[in-house]
Image (cartoon, rainbow, N blue to C red; front, side, top):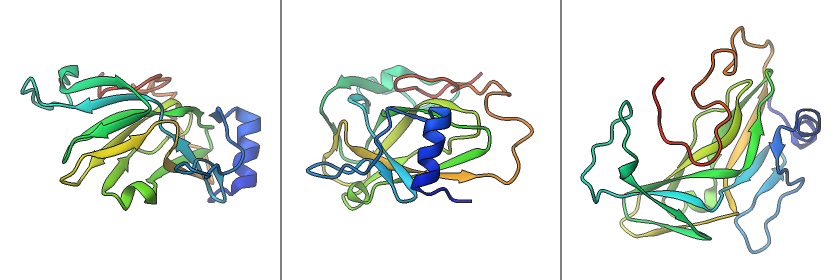
Length: 184
């Protein structure tokens, strides 16, 4: 079952599911964020890891080198053409065992050729969500910190899973800050 604003609000109160939680959609002079009719529009923090190829590093998910990125703390991030940046949500999520969460990008960014990618938030997972912003254009692209970045859509499952993310000791459990790929 897809959860509406009332049910999301109840989960936040019961489980501290989203913190800090913005109870309504903030949209004046910003890219919108907060609780919407059937989801929650999360904000991107001011911490960015911008892809660079200065050191000619090979991207290897099994042996990832942090030399691929330059770190920036800023109010807005400029992503080079045909490149990407990692960031994180301002919000910290604690997903209950009977909830599954999908993420979609904001249309404001999508209409500018900026794609936001996030894997699903599994039952019993918690942490800051690491966001990938891909600039698909030939021009530099700007991301605004502390404004809306993506929308999380919450589903209540009919039956809880036998093994949750927490149960299996998922490698990204409790992550804080922008988290790079890792292999256990």
